[in-house]
Image (cartoon, rainbow, N blue to C red):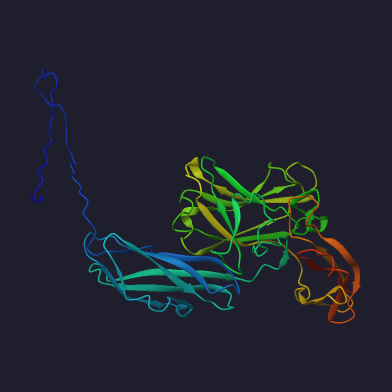
Length: 423
């Protein structure tokens, strides 16, 4: 029969049956506590959802809000989600999100959209979820997000958006591969998979993200002008709900100064369980270029390492994490509009390739060419300087690479560098 009553009994046992008459023990403040199931149905949700620090102009931003029905038998019916507060108009759900039914013991993951446009500042609102939870028919979630101006700096990583095909610009393709199925922007992203029984896995640059070192293509050159300057790192991770890394695993980016492990600096250490599933999640970090490397010598290079930790080394192998839109920028003063190649033309009859770019009158430019953005050989894929004495005579400069069309290369890459502005 169903349990209806409980009789507590305190028992005192004289094991050897030789106790003397008198007091053996004192009992006070006796309590018997029992747990009871949640109300049926019961809406359970975190009361705070913070989007963190976001970059102006990169929205709209989407976070997952996890809602559970912790009741035991009845369905939970959520009729609506409404917003109040000073910035209520910036938050929304996709159409047809409500009404929503969640079975007992189940949960739902909803997309919550934050679209601040180009506004800067802290934006707050409250979300009210209305349901048939009799004890709490309206549950409130506090929302917030901070939007910051973009970091003004020079990008040090070329292939951070993983658009150059087979990822020859990264090391260890067996565990860090190119994918076109799960991407944040463009057509490509990186997919890292764990190896069973190994706690640490990593990926490194392996090709000319300028200014790479010819004898150490995984490192970036640090010039004297960079010492003491601020830098900003950011990347986007995607944690799949099926086949992803375990919640207690971690991801991070490490910089080794002069390539030495001593004194290395870890950035954006993130527990996988803190990354929402099935959505892109941004990590950010800031720092300052030091004067000395980990070897105590003047700093001349930095080695970025993307690290994936299998805590406990208990993976079965093959668990994945996706990464896209990786950026490492060093601060630079405000200058002209971003340098952009505006046109590109191949003329087979004249055996030449012509490219043009937006220019500053009187500025000095250089044009480089490469046969690849990376390769297995140390000398393959690095930039060949074609001309470093191009003075802009108009707001659009043109360079002609004579003989390039007949080189027989399957692909060519070009870059334009600003050497100096007019005094």
